[in-house]
Image (cartoon, rainbow, N blue to C red; front, side, top):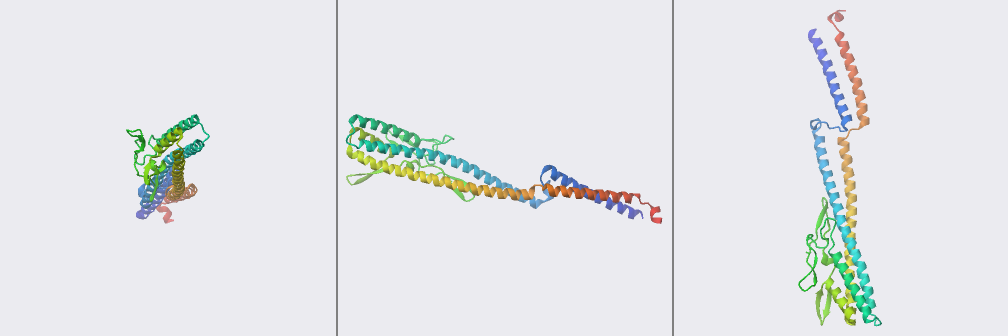
Length: 306
């Protein structure tokens, strides 16, 4: 009889301990908001959480890269668009200068404005982003892309490499503006020989032709300005396409992050409604176990004799 009583006590105590453990675990879930108090509680779920958190971190990193890339492209777009407007103004002035009725002093004034506008274009070609990097030097972001040589001619000193930024597991976008592809050289045909002339040199030659009333070279300059503007327009379209790709990729990243966060929440986060219901059931179970134990504790040999 003693063995039987000890066994009954042991079972009752074990039952109450198990329920109390369940209650403590549920209370912990309600207090912390997570179902995974200890990795040992659910190793598989813990491993899944770690994988999901790593994937979410990658998406966050990509999103930050997208923001930086878009800021750089926005700076390029602003300066290229500004250059387009300046070239339009230069063409208007050149057409005025081509008019035979313009006086010598009028041509001098036009030439002076063209030179000033050329200076604006040079400033935009050597523009920097918010981090102080040159935006039209290709991969050479630390040095001025357009600089004067010993003869005073402005040449492109950047490189032809496109800087690319990872914006997804298998996606990259070009953000390094190559100045020579924006401020393009022009091709001149002199006595059957074609030669390339730099963007800023062509504008300097145009200003000189206007000042001197050189009709032939003024007409040549009109065509060259058109060619320059075509290059700038192409660059604007390319930057716009890259920014559009960034917008689309940001949408992909947002959707992917939401899916990963939802999956992570389902594995890790406490469902308060379910946990509260479980806690109530566990409390009732504990009360029942305690009541049963109390009844068992009252039993004696005389009760069994009866």
